[in-house]
Image (cartoon, rainbow, N blue to C red; front, side):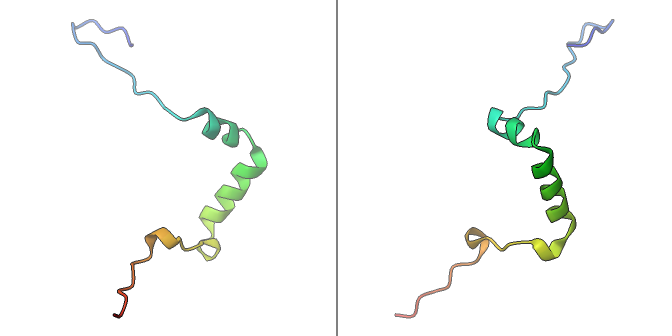
Length: 58
């Protein structure tokens, strides 16, 4: 918490991530690969979860 002269209680936002995410981000090769993939749209992979469901013909 920051020290303020008025009676307000200001809070500094926290950055929250899981231990697993922090461990992955400590891998410089992985971070470089992720950044390269994000910079090049041709590397994108379509997710099955985002595809619309096709109506079955019955």
